[in-house]
Amino acid sequence: MQNIRQVFQDQFNHSLAALASAPGRVEVIGNHTDYNGGTVIGACIKKRLYVALRLRDDQVIRLFSQNEDERVETSVSTYSNGDLPHWTAYPLGVFDEFRMLGSIENGFDMVVSSSIPTGEGLSSSAAFEMATALAFNELLGHDLPTSALVGLSHRAENRYVGVPCGLLDQTVVGFGKTDGLIVLDASTGRHHVFQIPSDVRLFIFRTHIRHELRHSPYEQRHRECRNVLIALSKVIPGIRHLAHLHPMDITAYDIIMDDILARRARHVVEEQRRVGTFLRTLHEGDIREAGQLLNASHHSSRSLFENSSPELDFLVGQLCAIPSVHGARLSGAGWGGAAMAMTSSEFSETDASAVADAYESMFEARPGWWTTSVCEGAKVESEDFVDAN
Image (cartoon, rainbow, N blue to C red):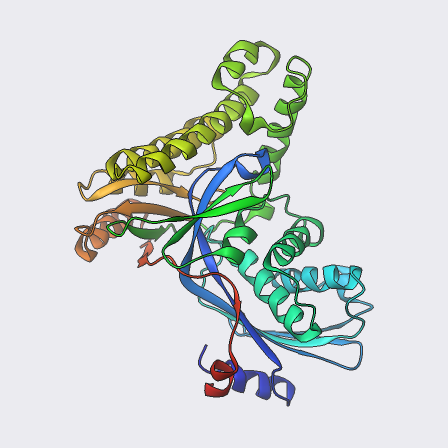
């Protein structure tokens, strides 16, 4: 991030006007509950993405990605033609939302630089959207609240990028607090902050299998959950969210669903209950029991929702065999990406390296890993930051 100002100058021959950043996020528990109206818990990680921006007085749009080492040029009249590299869809989707608000008519210059690994289920897309939204908000002088920018970024992901995700990613990235877990009630869009216990550490292990929602069964799972809700609404009048049902509802009415839909429904309903129990056990200081709930969440994702992978299962199994690991699970949509471990302070880099060694022996690829503190969410960087770089 130290040279983003110079890169902007080199690419566009003028200085940036706003700089915003946003972190990646880790899903702690609540797998696929958000778009089912449930509760989900996430936290911001210390890896961040930066967006440098300047508005133009013509119709030209120019974007440069340091990570891709790629520059793209389009215009206000041609940006939505669909023939641009996929990474451009995230800022252009946000730009599209601001245009629909009547906020902007001309083009812009942008540089993006990120330390968030892509394809790992750590929500680099939401970070890109939120940082872009903050930068536009700053330059346009709108002073929109974070909640409005979260909604705008979520709509960009759904409508422009084309991924029917829930609210978790943008909410956590937007509202993240240092040492705070973000607890989102997706049925209302409300959230609160839960202070993470001081003796809890989070480790993230990356498989060598990239995760990408556009080419995964994510939309199929989304559709299956919707089909469950449609089927059950015929016998349980007034239901609006799958996650609000009781496990006995699934047992009582599984006859009207096929086996696949019943398993999807059972995962969502039981995962919703695990989220509540997880918060209670953390509040009571029973960290070991909270870790067992993470293990149960992964088992349900693997056997009922079927969104795990052999690589993720191996990592979770290796981690759970270590006494200083309270619990572990896949994090994010699944089908590759990353696993998260909640550990005590006794879990060491030697332990992490041993897990990586075992993974490499099994899959002939070494997983990346790191420990992360829980960090603050998206923000406009100060003038001091810009001037110092």
